[in-house]
Image (cartoon, rainbow, N blue to C red; front, side):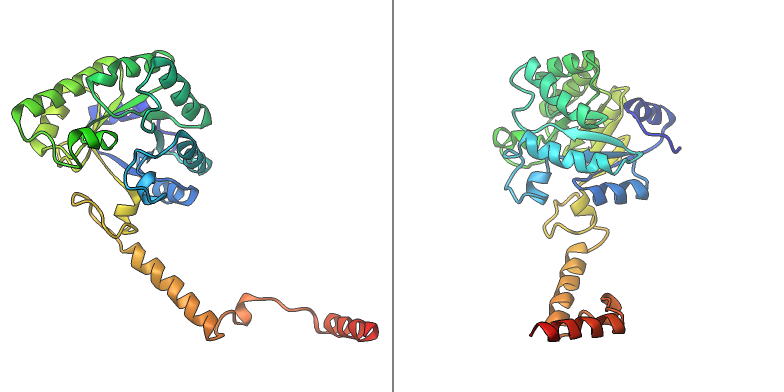
Length: 282
């Protein structure tokens, strides 16, 4: 399939039993790499707070920062679905704020937006869908709510907590969300949610039973020296890039770079003319 993927394609993939693969990306080349690798969806995540900006959490991420990185991903023109994460306090305060801020992301080129929360954000989801903005939900560990949750911990270990997660998923589906991210939830609970809703579930740290998986780009390629325990590192890009820069530093200091391969010279006769002209002026 070479055409652009849209939210409805995720729903069709679930019906066909096809696994959905997503990854985050925040820059033009990250988006190109992800798309060329064949992912189905790219999330411009508010995780950029930690992996791009160096914040301690996602809470300081602004809408301006999100839109800046969204534009870079959009410029890569990926076939993959582009989902824009909505930062903390850009959609929870009023329906008007949600529509205005999510609308900015869609006007910039996002194919959908992602909101954290379950039943408590279902009215916002309904309002956004009503005006034509596709919404991906996000339940389980919501990083924007880690202060209330009590840290970045596994959820769904207790039956009451698990029941609430199932209710949240159903509320999001009823409100019109086209898919739901389930983060850091007990695998059995994620399985039940996947079976209870007709829209796709995308897991991150919630086991193998969802309709798809998502990981952070920096965790997959090993740019993050301290990835979360549920992320698999497929490369050690941090060390590879550090070693490359270290070699560059060493070669410059030893005057081994640049060699003649990496620069150009004037034609001999032009250089001679120039030197004569300079000599005349002195």
